[in-house]
Length: 428
Image (cartoon, rainbow, N blue to C red; front, side, top):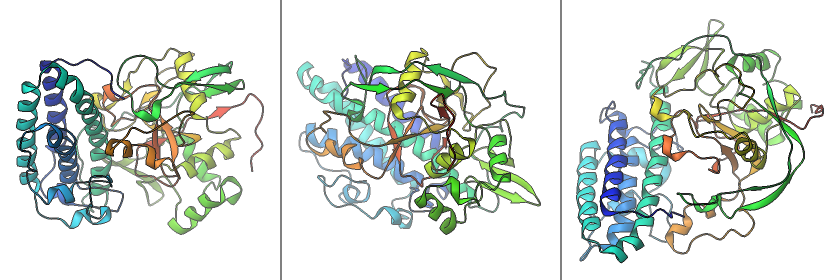
């Protein structure tokens, strides 16, 4: 997975940067905020802070530290997420029941492991550093994933508070979105998947060939205003637009709008990390499930792109990895800029649902050992998303990144980009 050559100084510097950013994200939160688990998919902030620390302790210190002993024996159990090879773990839906260790004690745990990690890296000779650096680099990207999850999760935590507290930032500007445009892509026999140097997760390989028919990709994301039209036309009441399982979720979950939307006296409001505000029609619709994205596409007479189509179009359009990512500190999608004749909102704003199931690429083999549990074991009952969102770290996004969530997941910052095969699609 990781391939970069690291010097001791560079490795310690990046370690400090990643670790400090996690603490920066937690700074606006009280110890009480950091303990709440508002639903089974959400983890408390202090758990995220502890789990990414457990990762370095488990996969680096335990393998390299002379006379290794864990910081606290029970942490090995409390902060293991899903690594069966490492041992038993505490039930995920019950993480909010653990009041101790508290947020401050988790901070001491982080400081202890940070000091030991710096000592280990500084003491390693060239050959040993070369061996352990890929695992540490994986730890960087693992922690960046949890930085994004930390923000997604605290958004849900704050949303259930009747006081409607804000996390940080200011609401996005209002305005009218540009009309939707299209970018034509020739298709043909193309290659997708990671190539060259630089970090990538194992699920981004191997690079392989895919045949694509000619298609078009929408030049921007679907907006709140367009979604309101879908709702007004009975989108959540008309079964003909929905997959059977999705229609079941609409009925059992009482879905009638995207997650975090609430209607008050005929006006729709949206909870964001910046507070709760009237729905801004110019912004991309967010926090919709795959089922909702697919239903909207059917209603519009279009479809969702496959992940191969998405990646090929982005690479073919020579899109730089820049956009409304977490470094902008908006913590929410922004409106698309003016039309350019090219794709807009590719990286940042919202993760984009694709029509592709999360399966291994041809020739994929998970790494050996516990690290092999990182991606491969989840290649079932998930759908692929591409692009990154407003909570994704800048150096964590790339055109080959394969995010994945279950079909019904709504708490992730996910949105919709339409595709079209060049011929009209018959709605169901």
